Picture 1 (cartoon, one colour):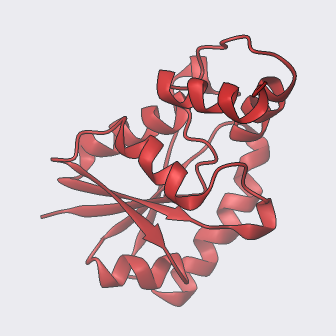
Picture 2 (cartoon, helix red, strand yellow):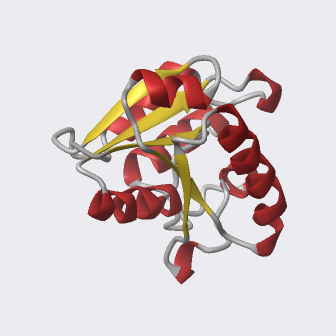
Picture 3 (cartoon, helix red, strand yellow):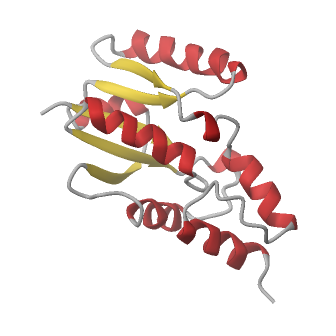
Amino acid sequence: MKIAVYPGTFDPITKGHLDVLHRAAVLFDRVIVAVAENEPKNPVFSLDERMAMIRENVDTEQFEVRRLEGLVVEFAKKVKAKALIRGLRAISDFEYEFQMAQMNRNLDESIETLFLMPSEKFFYTSSALIKQVARYTEKDTDLVPENVYRALIEKFHRE
């Protein structure tokens, strides 16, 4: 079985993330969405909330959602993954992603990093922008799944 790991904070998961995930599913038998706590990013949603939102949007036959602790390369070895999936949007993502891929290769060259681009309609979508818009408006941008939109409204617009 060919297994890949798609790591990230996913705070929250967007349709761009899901687009990349489904592209990876064409290439791999199983894709593990590895959700990182990532405290330096000060996530709006708890790790459990993020994992639940992702699970509501994926087919559990081909996808698995798990907590990521430690280095992603070590996690990938533990789950017998052959590749790490990373989404690339704009050119500004490239330098950071390139550095991370090179470090991961340095740690274990048997695990490849594959860069997948989302559909053009999600190319400029980011969790940070989604949260910024949701903080100041209840407008549905149609860039996140319905359950995520509801969670954002609940988080930022409780009365």
